[in-house]
Length: 360
Image 1 (cartoon, rainbow, N blue to C red):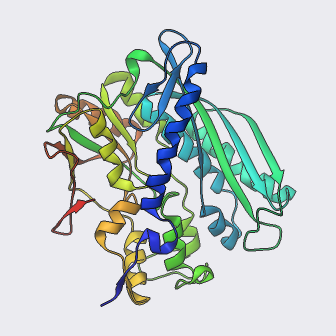
Image 2 (cartoon, rainbow, N blue to C red; image 1 turned 30 degrees about the horizontal axis):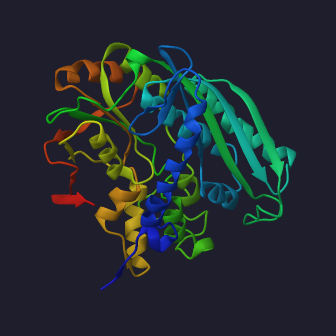
């Protein structure tokens, strides 16, 4: 029997990460410095008041080890889109409109052509999200950053601040069984589960292919496929919130579909069932390649690690479903109903390939 291969086997221990995040509660000691009242806790972030009814959402995100694939492929002009996408997609989960971006790039060396390529992607992401880049920093830290090639290693992080009025905050409350879940399509693996992608697909890290190989099932080089930039969902989500009450907004990133359970802390007695998936070919290539290497990546592991074709999930009242779809179809390619809210407390169910799975 082939060995089950998981994200933990690839080097990212999911259980340890969850345990370590408990230390974040220590940050509550700093909340006393908020000037206009308390922090508002939301399912996926916290917002803080700057006036009686106006709140800011401040997020920071990186693109993780996707930078290593950019380096392997010697292609640096799209990775900045990922950095912007990861953080603006986080900001809009609260209903906030992104106001400003900043980037921070640590590198072996600030080589001018590399810097220009990095900024090209950041600018493209900023334009797509309608948000200015008002600050940034590049640091040369060769003793920390090594990379895979001489003088080309780097790490990229972006931060974003957004604003939302109290009445427009997406709180995760009043979600009830029968409410539909609408999915906005992803562009592929985005910027999550990349450590697993690298260990299976690329020879550089013990996998199957050179960066320029075109595996069966793909129509372009594997590195270019893996580098496809993360989708930005700012325009469709904010257009929807202008006209429809959004109960929950989920950026489907790390921990994938298990993330929906965060909403159960705000709407009790609910679960989620997903039954509409059309994942891009790269997800099947990951599983097939693992099999050829003597491993097995289960469907359950895929749905706990990857977006499997849907990059953002939106929950609205079932009475608003048709209106929501009409609005989204004006600004988003092929939004679809991907599931519904159930009455099974904290249970995430997946219907896929005539198989019923429960994610734990």
